[in-house]
Length: 400
Ligand SMILES: Cc1ncc(COP(=O)(O)O)c(C=O)c1O
Image 1 (cartoon, protein in one colour):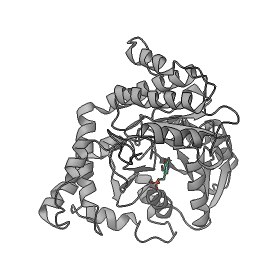
Image 2 (cartoon, protein in one colour):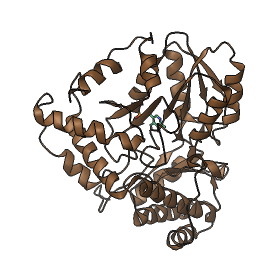
Image 3 (cartoon, protein in one colour):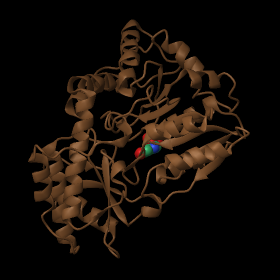
Image 4 (cartoon, helix red, strand yellow):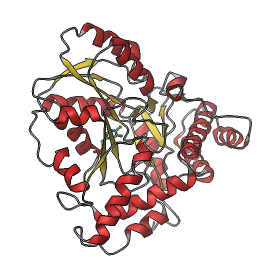
């Protein structure tokens, strides 16, 4: 046996995603003086052109950090010790954000969930209506739960907050939805949007983002949670001069400029349609295999990943191991309470029909070799779905 693997690895976890050659080439340049004129031009350009990706006219803060840092930044810049926050247990990542809020000294009011549905707007409305003393200072939700492949209806949650007439801030994690699934920071009245570089933006891990509303900036003036590295005010002051208050991730910013150019060239709406189409074809394959999609509400199907339930008694991790060893294809594992019970197919970022076809072929061959009692023909179904012009991707309710 040789350890050499011929051909290209298939990285089909739901992020980090495949980094396109164009972005790798853009990053592969000498690092420049981050206080010099060339950098000022680079930063100025990126800080402007990133806004339409969030569909905002407001400022976007860029941290040299993973997404977890941007979660923390959202909370510490806007809230004070003991403040209550309303969160929804949609899956593993929502639970981690919730645990972070508790560690920071916030009181979490949790809407429990079954990890197969998104945030229920009616329960948000009811919880806020009950909060007559206005103790809840923020509603924090995950747009696309990467552990479950469920996309919450952000616009409907916004309308629920408005119906309750509650002044809470609205914070949304778009780490696995930005630049993959329709998202509108301004139109949906989001105060802080949290995002990361390593998924729809097609970059390596290492950058994360906070898009800010006027209301979030006003809240930051009185927020008392301790902060230093994450503080928006010095970042925004430095950014106004085209620099950062500390050393930025210069080469990732070269990559970000290229990623924005690629998204502009394809057009955001086309990017969303492409993701929707690949997700639909993936679900066709899963159904033909006789397996179950974890997400139970078709309005909440994720366009960026599909979590698939293994038949009773079958180990998803053993299947993933076999597929990695035989076909050099990485699939996402089940996280938290879903460990061993599901595998996740990432179909986001720089991705096309043939990459999806290859991915589904690897899974179908893996299922056969694994001896999983499933029907073959998933790939055939997916190819039919991809080539049938009449078949449209599921319309996202949140875009209504
Ligand atoms: C929805 C979501 N939120 C938060 C995170 C945490 O981000 P990071 O691992 O970049 O810190 C992830 C990571 O995959 C995620 O998918």
